[in-house]
Image 1: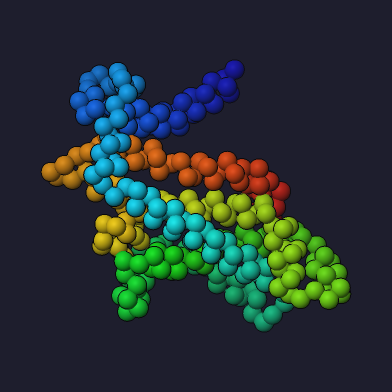
Image 2: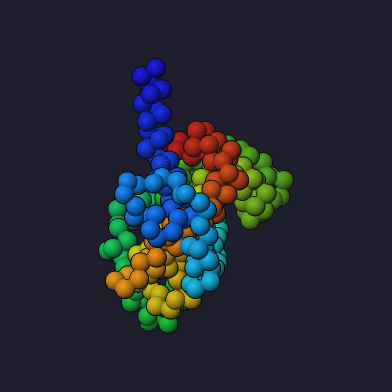
Length: 266
C-alpha cells in the first residue's frame, strides 16, 4: 500500500504540470492569473490558438522543428550505426584508442563548443540555414556507444556466413545489420529527435530570422517586456509535445526491447 501511494504521488507530480499546461491553453488571460488558481477553465477559450496560428509564425516554426528533428535523427542514427558496426565487428589500428576518444567527447558540454562552431558557421556562410542546425550535431558519441554495445551482442558468424555467400560489406550492413538493429535504432531515434526538438541554445546562436526559428526558440518570443502572451505559449507548448508522443508510441515496443535486451550491454 505504501509503495502504491508513493507511486501515485510521483505520477501526480509528473502529470500535473502537463495537465495545467493543456488547461491553461484554453483559458483567457484573466483566468491564467486568477487567485485561487483554477486548474480547469470555466469554458473552452480558443483565442490563444487563434493568436498562435493567426498572428505568429508558429506553423513555420513547427515545420522547421519537424524537418530539423527528422533530418538530425536520420543522419545521426545512420552515422552512429555505421560507426558502431565498425567498432564492434572490424579490427583496425588504434580501434580502442579511437573509441575512447569518441567517448571522451561526451564530457564536452555544448557551451564549450559554441564559439568554435559558430566561427565555422560564419566562415562557411551557413548561419540562418538548416545545414547549420543539422550537420554540426550529426555525429553523436552516445549513439556510437549504444550502437557498438548492441552490435557486440550479435554473433559475428552471421556476417561471416554472408561473406562466404558472396555478400559485400554494404549488402551485409543494409540486409543484416540494420534489420537486426531495430531495437537500438528505436532508442537512438527517440533520444536524437527529442534532443533536437528541445534544443534551444544552438538555434539561438545561429539563427536571426523569425522564419527560421524552431518551436523551442519561437515560443519564448511571445513573452517580452511589452507583450506577455502566456496563453499562446501554453497552446504552442501543448502542440509541440504531439510529435514526441507520436514518435514514442510508434517506437515504444522497439524502445523497451532495446533498453532491456541489448542497448546497454557491455
